[in-house]
Length: 121
Image (cartoon, rainbow, N blue to C red; front, side):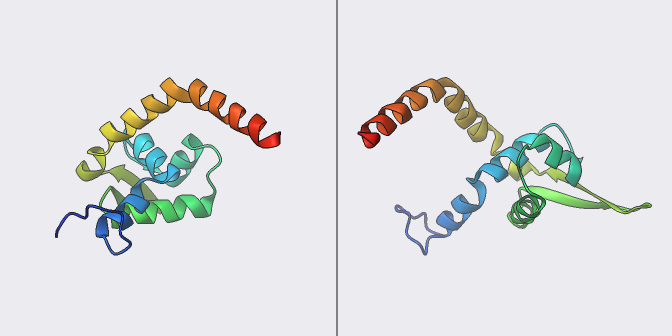
């Protein structure tokens, strides 16, 4: 499959980018770096995510091969999620992006304040 040079809507990379670049996906993959977890454990680690949003995110990540889902037989039956080797390959880029946000949060906040004060005038 050819690599698209632009974000054309028909380019498969655009769909994949949409699937992995949202905030919940990045957080789920980062959380699962610590090891396999059940749904509620993941939810506790990610403040503010709704059950619906997390369920949709986990399904997308599983569909894309970035996480795996394992049913744990027992009473009650449980489900555990784990990062796959393909998902693990995203940790470096995600960590770099996180480090960038930490390094530049003050600069961004200053830019926001300047914009907001200019916009209010």
